[in-house]
Image (cartoon, rainbow over the protein chains, first blue to last red):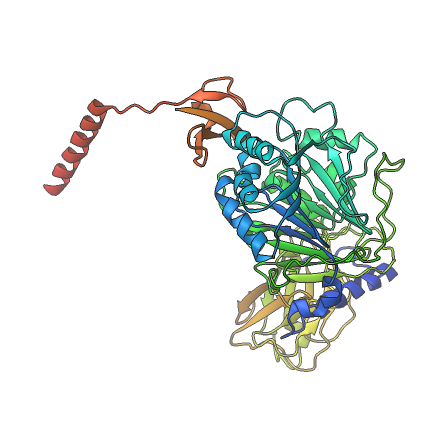
Length: 486
Length: 70
């Protein structure tokens, strides 16, 4: 055992609230209950945002009532897939087609898209580029007589009175000639829910944006430049304060995206991270007050609800930052995820279920930094207690270590033997980095390094067993086998 | 063949041939002339080298023959 350290896992009133979150997440994972079924109410919202899996590239689809927005179209060989995905959803037109910048992994599929759907308006960065793909795209837009708009900071696009579409970047005076830097950054808001689409805008664009009065704050962030380290700075993340980050990236891409530095920054600051190379297409639905996340590779069927234009309902119109805000970093009051303060990170995948909905209670929490659940491991086990197991239940234990950088709330997590029967459920406990906690089978007084199951019989088989640690959703965090002390 | 240098990604240049834009050629930036940047149009030529081809085949054939005799 490691030497004791001062008590740090304080069970405060805040942690009790955090425990409620744990219970909430635990509730999301009822065995045999389809994740999607739990949140049908939230899923009935009339905003749907699909981060399409187009390999190494970007394409995001926004469906709002009878309006369709497509932001980028992936590589040239992904145009067919984008068209197919839209058709699968019943899309028959595009109101706004956005080309964030002229690189082929963003505009390559435009020819296929323009051939398949009538388009109302095109919003372009207007940055000259010699790519034949971009040239053909412009020629087709011109030939079809589609209205062509060049993006400029502060510009708004009116498609529906309840939907705010605001250009945050590039500014009128472009940021040099770099195409990524001058990507169109769009903030789309419905009610209290905002999405930030960043194209490939890098640090330079982020810094420039932060100097303006425009607020980039959004619950959902499409991570810029496929997770490259030249974007998504900590300062930018701190201002966006996203609750969900989506990285559009291809498997085994030759550029090493997403970069480790970016993932580390996201994991430190963002509660939930999704990647199209692992999760497939990611769907986020919102009713303007809350939202749910469903992934193609998860349990929900993201293609199940065809797009069917419906009359506008009476949901509140958002109050977007159409003009520079006097307090760009002002704290959000009620958000879709208010149970999570900006400085708390929830376990990232695979700890999160494929389909979750965040409720909207208005509460505040103490400043507690939560680390990455994937860094929690079973450090050691002792299934065979010294002496008689029955007499020495404290001698049977499992030690758990958080090897990450931030504390991890393990409320609602469980520990079981190989059979999974009668698991021990963790109380509101904050597992501090580098400080292992020993979970003993017997009874005792919990402290910062010891927890007790309070059992009267041994749990683990001396001759060989496996300790299984699961998070509140039932996902296995770690397991370790042993037949005695290890 | 003329290609556009579409973009630079982490030291890799992505080239798009003007005549066959559905194709992409990725080349380490270090192999391109100094000073190349996005949007530059490059003349790209591939030339067959019959002498080098024959020499390489002869060399490999020799290796095979040696190995057969072992």
